[in-house]
Image 1 (cartoon, one colour):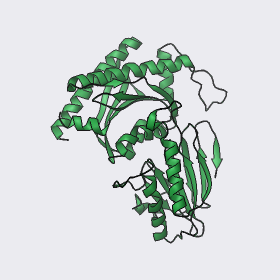
Image 2: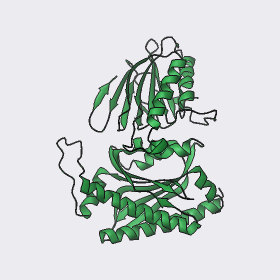
Image 3: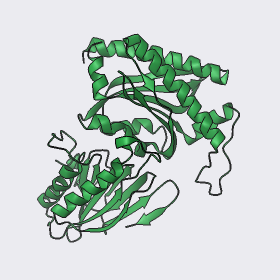
Image 4: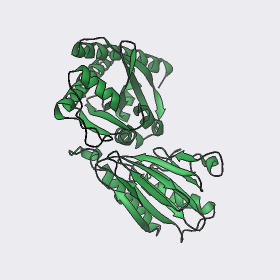
Length: 170
Length: 198
């Protein structure tokens, strides 16, 4: 289910990079990190359990396709899978809150399906969270540049940086 | 895909890389070599890491390849490599107000786009001809961002049907110096089917 889940309680790992299509969850002091373009970083957190997860979503809908070994690839699969994994480790759906980042339109010109994939990903992730009744506390979505997100599990803070030195704390 | 097919594709892509190097050598009027680093199936989550030659920003020139050998071709330079390359062409990055934010003028951007045009066209034409297929790269799109963030764009098509993609990777050498630049081609699932007939 979550990739590299053996990292969940490994005290040696401090920063876990969440690659395209991956889902990872962990506890503090560990940190989850991802670099996003048109992808969406879905950060979920249970503040009582201090348990958080990050899904790196590449595409909006699986349309029934198998996800294979990358449970985070499609928004409609990644969100429920991440919630399910967190609940397996003690989280409660009633306490889980979401923060989102990514979904950039990397091409300034209209490039067909590639041009609007960021917007489609945003809508698909929000739709999946709504259906699971997970509130979105904050987001940094859209735009035209990539982002690096760092999810600090001590307080559930999602830091978003882009190459223009714009830095947000969600 | 059979091992013999992969071997043939590796040989052809190596020859195509040589052609691209020769074309760039004419552009720069000094010897440029392009060395094939890999021609194989790779997990999609690893691809952005291959494209990011260094941490931080990259200059990426992205071209959609149309025809029977369709897919996405990408030329990625680390910022220092892009600066070096532009310098070799007689250009220069402008000083930026913020040291962390480079300013690449339209002339320099055009130099990089033309480099990509030559490199990608030479590589894809050689590759396609060897296979008896057609390949027409479109004009490159200039992107300045973290290479890993751009990686998602080139992976979308393959990722819809698979967790892995066939990736050709080529490194640049100027003399004995390795440039932090890479050329990559990711064929579409349709084109991969053509490869299976190799």
